[in-house]
Length: 62
Image 1 (cartoon, one colour):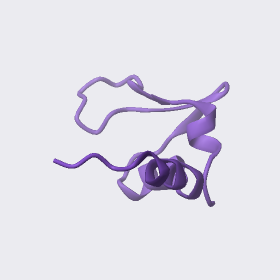
Image 2 (cartoon, one colour):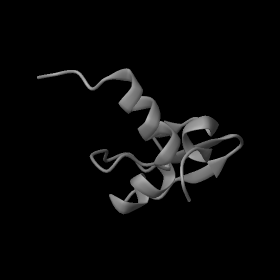
Image 3 (cartoon, one colour):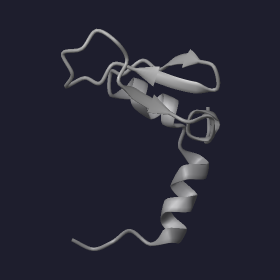
Protein backbone atom coordinates (compact mmCIF):
# COMPACT_ATOMS: atom_id res chain seq x y z
CA UNK A 1 0.00 0.00 0.00
CA UNK A 2 1.30 3.47 -0.88
CA UNK A 3 2.30 5.83 1.92
CA UNK A 4 0.36 9.08 2.28
CA UNK A 5 2.72 12.01 1.63
CA UNK A 6 3.80 13.95 4.74
CA UNK A 7 2.38 17.18 3.31
CA UNK A 8 -1.05 15.57 3.00
CA UNK A 9 -0.88 14.20 6.56
CA UNK A 10 0.05 17.64 7.92
CA UNK A 11 -2.84 19.24 6.00
CA UNK A 12 -5.29 16.70 7.42
CA UNK A 13 -4.00 17.26 10.97
CA UNK A 14 -4.56 21.02 10.55
CA UNK A 15 -7.98 20.82 8.91
CA UNK A 16 -9.71 17.87 10.60
CA UNK A 17 -10.71 17.91 14.25
CA UNK A 18 -9.88 14.59 15.89
CA UNK A 19 -12.71 15.18 18.36
CA UNK A 20 -15.29 15.60 15.56
CA UNK A 21 -13.88 12.63 13.67
CA UNK A 22 -14.14 10.41 16.77
CA UNK A 23 -17.69 11.58 17.48
CA UNK A 24 -18.69 10.88 13.86
CA UNK A 25 -17.58 7.29 14.49
CA UNK A 26 -19.64 7.09 17.69
CA UNK A 27 -16.77 7.73 20.14
CA UNK A 28 -17.36 10.51 22.69
CA UNK A 29 -14.10 12.02 23.97
CA UNK A 30 -14.29 13.38 27.52
CA UNK A 31 -11.84 15.95 28.84
CA UNK A 32 -9.48 14.70 31.53
CA UNK A 33 -7.01 17.47 32.20
CA UNK A 34 -5.30 18.40 28.95
CA UNK A 35 -6.31 15.18 27.18
CA UNK A 36 -9.44 13.65 25.73
CA UNK A 37 -10.23 10.09 26.79
CA UNK A 38 -12.77 7.52 25.68
CA UNK A 39 -13.61 3.86 26.03
CA UNK A 40 -12.39 2.08 22.92
CA UNK A 41 -15.39 0.75 20.94
CA UNK A 42 -13.78 -2.71 20.76
CA UNK A 43 -12.96 -2.81 24.49
CA UNK A 44 -15.05 -4.55 27.12
CA UNK A 45 -13.46 -2.42 29.86
CA UNK A 46 -15.66 0.11 31.63
CA UNK A 47 -12.78 2.58 32.08
CA UNK A 48 -11.49 4.79 29.24
CA UNK A 49 -8.66 3.09 27.38
CA UNK A 50 -8.14 5.50 24.47
CA UNK A 51 -6.43 8.86 24.85
CA UNK A 52 -5.91 11.83 22.52
CA UNK A 53 -3.41 14.56 23.33
CA UNK A 54 -4.39 18.23 23.56
CA UNK A 55 -2.85 19.02 20.18
CA UNK A 56 -4.93 16.28 18.56
CA UNK A 57 -8.18 17.20 20.28
CA UNK A 58 -7.76 20.95 19.84
CA UNK A 59 -6.62 20.95 16.23
CA UNK A 60 -8.56 21.30 13.04
CA UNK A 61 -11.82 22.90 12.03
CA UNK A 62 -14.59 22.80 14.60
